[in-house]
Length: 139
Figure (cartoon, rainbow, N blue to C red):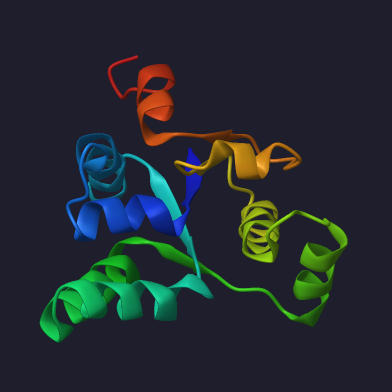
């Protein structure tokens, strides 16, 4: 199964944000262990680096970036993909881009804590906790 992670899930992990850390870390661990195929949108790499560095340190930001680059497929869009994202007419363009990357990489789910931002998405969005309860590896 392939999932795309929204930035808030990775920030939960790299910044150890409670009360969300445990579920988000479990999803990231499934990707790291190869039990789940993970995608991260290319446009989010710079934001991830910036925020981890701002609230932690440069070595922490570099480690976060290295982890994502090692374990996740990086989803890129070409000009046609960016135009497709604009046509989705989401309230937040970044969420439209995440959705477009999810579609272009044939992701099964978008994992985010902001599922309400993806109600118009053709790719279903689930919170990390909901995803784990519905799709735990033991099932």
